[in-house]
Structure formats: structure tokens, C-alpha cells
Image (cartoon, rainbow, N blue to C red; front, side, top):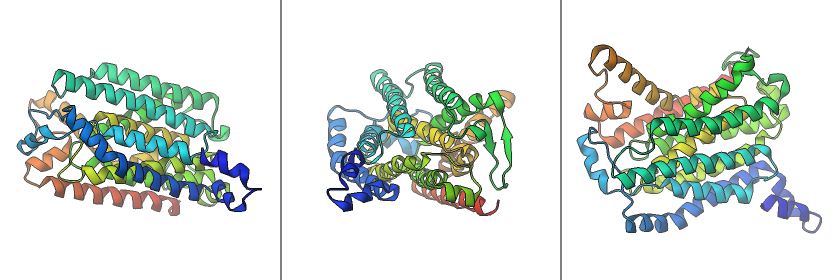
Length: 361
């Protein structure tokens, strides 16, 4: 919004020229979403406490989690508000990727909100049925996949998937690319959702992944840089950086309240939309497999659940003490804060590895 207002006035006041720069507006987005979090956060927490919006904890979880029953949830509302306001203020609203990401934010956010609402209404850790949740996610992801199929960012690479670490090596998925896009978005949404089980764990990784993808988006949107780094150039992708830096700021603001011991949890309201939009970003900038490396912690969390289910069906025994795997380490005796910190360290290492892939091509 600010771009559309002030950039038109550069003839009146030349310094308004700064609004054309993505880097300037990305910085503004970080600060704005962080400021909104600090101003609105205490208000939202007080309101949620007033209406007794409290976390429903799994009865089969670690014993130490019983105290979390009194912690407020639906904190994803704070991140939704922060990201939306910041993006609307600082991003170019005529950019097709920004439009899609705002729509995705609202739709995934609504799904998560309704899931949290049902959990509170039924006083249970179970909300929307897995089938219904998955179906709604599929509808959103399929819409994105169809759009990209008929309006590709770069027609030459429309159905190609770049292999990280390898120079100009692509796999042409042809008509299967639509399925690949759906799996990426739905998988990302659910992966973040499963990771959101310890204070600060999910949002810490969201900050790492969003910051890293913001740089990849900027590189992809800059033809010269993309050509130098041998990555797919995507016209208009640089603007996605503004949206992602809004997430970074909102994540830092939310972590202020969500760090151990948490005052508030994001709930599905936050985790489903954050995972969903990160998946959307990855397909928009043609870095689908980089997301697998960047979000390696999310991937391992999902795999731990799948492996646990498969192993139990085959042997009637548990391979892990509990899944997702962060609970396994808790039950082994590691303090919650130590598990979270060590997972963050792994996330940072994976981010470094992702950027290293650019120079190892």
C-alpha cells in the first residue's frame, strides 16, 4: 500500500524513491510486524485468557506437559494479524505472488482457526477430522498448482524441478508436476503443524526457513543474480521477500511470548497457515527441493510419525518413545528447552547447507 501511495509522489519528494527498493520495504515489513506483535500481543493474550481459550494437551504425552493445560492457545491469530498488516503496508499489492500468498494466509488460517475452535468446543485435543482437514488443504494446493500450470512464472522451466548442489540439472515431471506442487504445499502445512509441540520449537524454525527463503526469493527475482548463481529466474519473485520478512518479524514477536515457559501457543491457527505459505513460496520461486533441506527438521518430524505408525502396525511395538520425535527426546530425559535449542541449531546448520548448495553447483 505504501509503495502505491508514495512511489507515485517521487516527483514531489525525491526521497520517496526508496519505496521502489525491495530491501527497504522488506526492512519495513520486519519492523512493522514486530511492532504489531509487541503492541497487540498483550491485548490478544488478555482476551484469550478472559475467554478461557486454553491448550488441549494429549493425555498420552510427556508428564511435564500437564502444566500446559492452562496456557492460552490460538496465538496464531497474532501472527496472522502481524503478517497481514505488514504485508498490506509494505508489499506491492499488484504482484500476483503477494495476492496468492495473502489468499493462502487467510484460507489456511481459517482452517487452523476452525480446528482450534472445535478442540476448545469439544474440550479435546482432536478438532477437524483428518479427512476434512486434508481435503481443504488439497483444494487450496490444487488451486495453486492449476494456476502455476496455466500461468507459469517461467514457461521454459514450468514443469522442471531443480536438483540442489548440481549445476543445471533438472527433472521434468511433466503433468505430474501438479501432483508435486500439491504434495509440497500440503506436506509443508502438516509438517509445521506436527512440529508445533514444544515452546518456541516451531516458530524458531519458521524464522530460520522464512529468512532463508526470503533470500532465495530475492535471488530468483533478480535476473543477474539468478543467472550468476545458476538458479531459475522468476519474474516478480523478489517481492515475495517482503512477505517472508513480515513472517520473520511476526515470528520474532511471537517468540517473545512463546519462548520457554510459553505464555501462549500458536495452535493450528498459526502452524497450518505458516507451513502452507512456505510451501507456496517454494513452488513459486522454483526451489521445492531446497525447502526439503531448509525444513529438514520439519521433514524429520513427519517421518518420525510415519515410521512410528508403520513400525507399530508391523510389530505392535513402538520404535520411538513417542512421536513426533521431539517428544521422544523429552521422554528420554532431555529438558524441553534443551530439545528446542538443539533443534534450532540443526535448523541453522541446514540453512547454511542450503546456501552452500548455491556455490557447490
